[in-house]
Image (tube, rainbow, N blue to C red; front, top):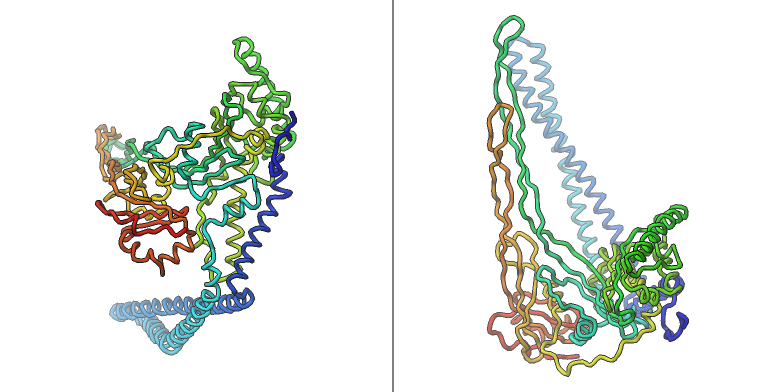
Length: 611
């Protein structure tokens, strides 16, 4: 069966080539078309706004120019004040010279003192101060005009700003690559599918909290991109020092006793526990193809190697692989090298445990695709980790660590149509590029696109509306001081516990775990050159675990960010938010999350679903 067999019309045979020849330009065109359509809907005149922004920029330049003049005049005034002080000093010196009968020096200091004081005072009063006043008035007037132009520019663009949506990026990606189906949020059906069929999310680590989430599917095969805040305990080495002094006595060549002074810096260190926090982003993809295969590979940045360096690496790696194959034959284990030495060496995965299924996945076309990704000098190249554990595939990359995953409509708000367009295009292109190249290693394997999952029987009803990951994401997007324990001196790991359904909403308990910091000092005895031990103080910080529980309620309203804000400002949610969201609230992925007081029972009834 060829690699192309059973592939759908929108399948991606060669991901890198498809991105370069089709998707990159198509996505930009879709973004430009969407932005231009919003601009037409808004009725905003880009040319008029461009003129206003140009006038504002020119006015700002005048303000900065006047500020420069003010700074120079203030510096000159400072110099003149210094000269007045210096002149006063000269006057006092001249009196001393006259008393000491050094008349010439006294006259010189007297004249210099009078010159510095009178001359500087006249310059300040007649030149600098009037100029400062004039330029300050000028700057204030220029600033007023600049503020008026800026206000006018914001008013001009306001209809456009009001039209932006927070979830448009996903829609543009789906339009560009129909093979991808992205979810509005990580719903319980998607979790049930990933968990029940593939074993995803069985272990909930208390030291890990979800701070970013994106889910979807490729030809029915689900994937999750999650960004997590990870807590671990490390150590920190603290140091302290003191200087000691002592004296010794020795006799010189003449027999005289002399005192010799000595000093020495004594240093001590202590190592203490310290919490560490890191952020990790990974893509988890479920596919039933090659279900018994396990392997891993790590990046080696093959794209940075010249052709000759790559050849040498392949030659050296091939020898190592053949030694591994010989050892496998002797031990009776199963490992045979692939026919493509370049793929074998550059991709790695020599820890694979099922050669038959590995070859089933990595057909000649899959090998070609993977090598193209690994050696691509224009894109991200070989910057990704890949691990397959049965039906689950894990991808993490260096570029995804820098990926801005948050779709926020407010990021596009601007007083300038031109700046707004640039921000819109730059953010969406970077978002698409990062997601696509995290998926690219999976898209490079045609079998994954050929394989449609077997039917899965979903539950008729679920005990909760929202997944743990979605609840953690929701509370992590809210103001963190709303959950942090009192006196917390570190970040908080937020973990959620489902308390129960409340009509159409979930009540969830948020446990924030952090550390209180206490300054301590240890005294470490250190032997000095004086023959004595000295206690060297070493300041360090003790981290004491603390936690606090806070209850929230969550409900899917299904409104866009724009429509929710409209309801917040003018609609039925305005008074409800003042009651339930007075402490803190957040609205992301179409889900409202509010901190609610204990015993509160009207949350669900107060937020009517309008979708």
